[in-house]
Image (cartoon, rainbow, N blue to C red; front, side, top):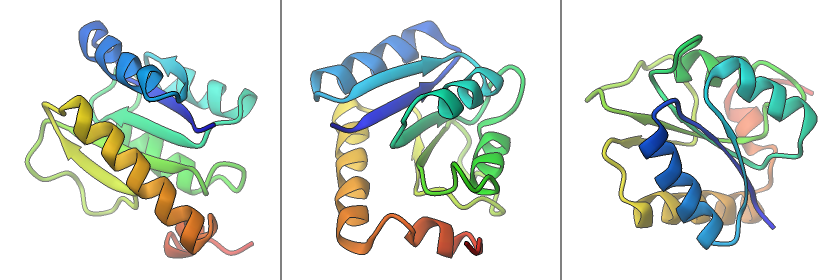
Length: 133
């Protein structure tokens, strides 16, 4: 079973994303900010992180950067959701979705990336990010 961590501080958006993930059969966890998200990732087996770019304590970009530079977390699938037309170029995330995100688009993107990872191997993300293990 795929486990998804939804990181979003707007209750309506969070509820929508969580509902669609649960309907798809994903084990779904939540965090309202970056600090809480890091705590969940350290204590729970998570496969996919879906994070809003604008969060209270740290941006989704900062969260992605932290994840990619942590050996224990670098292989996670990271999907950034942004209302901005062009997010920063310094990131390595698996996908960038633009708000508003249709539920079907979110689950299709999760399924696509997870399928590619099974074919290409989980370590591909870490290699592309320039990390050596």
